[in-house]
Image 1 (tube, rainbow, N blue to C red):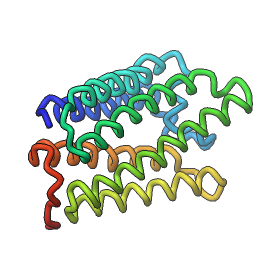
Image 2: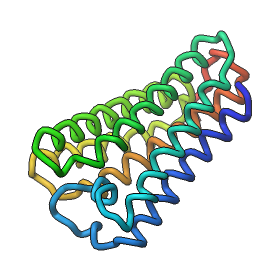
Image 3: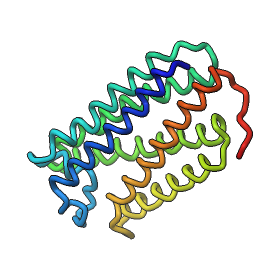
Length: 199
């Protein structure tokens, strides 16, 4: 797999967290909101809508470009390519559904459904990367962290907790790290499907 794929994956995660940080700096009060809007709060306010949009749009474009640069016929590389393409579309879907999610209950539920779909997809992709691509202990730990974040998000959704913002940051950070590590592993293996021993 080409180094350009790994580079674009790394850049995508840097853009994501950089623009989220800009949003937090502009409107830190959303860190303490209890309305369970999470990061989506930044997408419906004038001061943060531009950096919020860039936090999803630029990573989606970079991830799509990374996927299109994968031309190996190896099964593992092809699967990683499909994961990247699906992720790019999910990022765009979350972004578009954010803008109007506070207009009515139906649009809110649509946005929540898209966000849940992306969380579940990212967790499944992380499990494949941690268990089938890298096989390293650190990646299994990252997977555990991501699953813990997913559990916190689920408990927030049912009203037991009010930690959606934290859950989103935890799951995104763990997934981003696994995505980068998966790309690096495939690049170093040159598309080989040989398993990397756990360390």
